[in-house]
Image 1 (cartoon, rainbow, N blue to C red):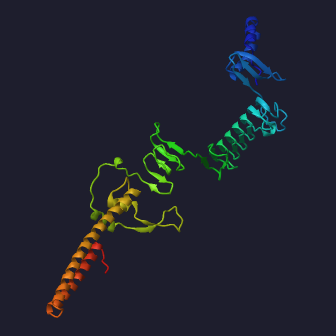
Image 2 (image 1 turned 180 degrees about the horizontal axis):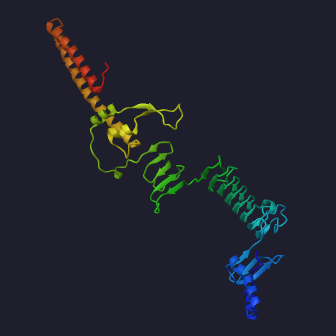
Length: 391
């Protein structure tokens, strides 16, 4: 530290006795100039000096204090203030490191103190440069690592271990948080990853009043929006169930502007809708899908918010409307078939009454065949509207 610090009382005496002399006044001013540069406070109460008279400790009248020193890495470890077990508050200037609390062994020996590191708590260790460890039995063992909580280890460079029994597992850039639901240690599996153990659910809110957001849960707990038996639940009402089924919100109380639709019209549009087999550009060659493009779907039905995506509820609705149209056609054809059966029975009875020997019987048989054939043709045409008909 700079040796220009001067006690307030000494400064006052010099001012009274010597400042009238021009030479001494000039000399004193040159000594006092660095004081304003190095320290903003001047109410000095106590000064500690090293052998070279450098002020490495200053205590001020209002209780503030300043500890200085010179950093050199102390490769030999000879300048550590104290080693071994004990309770202490320790500033280690040769490594620019700070310790506070207590240890039961060698956690705060020079070999376990990283340059510019901080460790505060019980049996905590910050053995790497720029590492930080807080809490109970936490360890920050790699460059710029951070460990806080209980029994946590940050062993990857720039990794973070928080909570209870969290371990970054030598995975750099990883983040591990563990709740207190288990004494089992959760470890990072890969570099640059976020790993969480939150048995009560991971809750993300996107509004200050907690009305919107997403909850990741185990299914045993209930989300903030009332869904249970869910893995992912949302404030919209949609959720992914524990059985892997995505449940879209369809509550009548959340809908309005209801309109009737023509099932036949939907079916006609479906018949014209192009369906192809395709793959997403990001997928492997062995993965494919069948369906329309969002542009064709939107052009046909005008459903959803844009022409680049298809909502599952819209695709389901169109499919159900088409099914309703086919069901109505099937019902009508069934009624026509029953009518033809009745006509057939009447003709058979007529033939029976005429003993099958008269020309009327033969004519009746011909009419029956003609009626059945015509009915089948009409039914086939109704089932395949437009386009080529295959018989």
